Length: 220
Image (cartoon, rainbow, N blue to C red; front, top):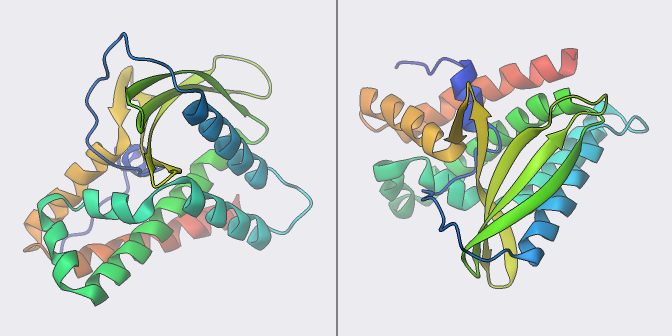
């Protein structure tokens, strides 16, 4: 079994790890105030949870975990990142449940680790573009507490049955915009291709990576 190395690119792919294939929206598309408010509210709460000094580390972790579960459509993302191997989840309930949980734990650990570096920063939503009324790209900026250059972040969110959920996030890496779930899908597919499509092996690998991230967060 070949392990996936935890590189900077791998982190960027896993941040949010939020996923669905994203095509560039039309420039003339309308803004969506409801979608913008959703991102503003939930991203702000997530950052505040990580910066709360009045609770223990375990309490912060639990609160943040619960927030991200509500903010992002983790089951959908977990299926997307497996690409052509996702069909295994439909025929094996035990595999599906184990994979979704492992992926969710891993993704939320990464968010906690990296977003923790923005302690005191704020999210500022600056606009949105509708792909359609239920599929919106929300543009935002991460504004450092001490001033300095804001970092652009885009969120793709969809509305199903009246509930918005994040399914992908775009960040700037080395001058290029990267849609994270797509990049993570490529990383996972490479692992699965090398390991005969063994989703359980991939789940075991990311559990080990989750434990390593949790250890780093505990030392921070």
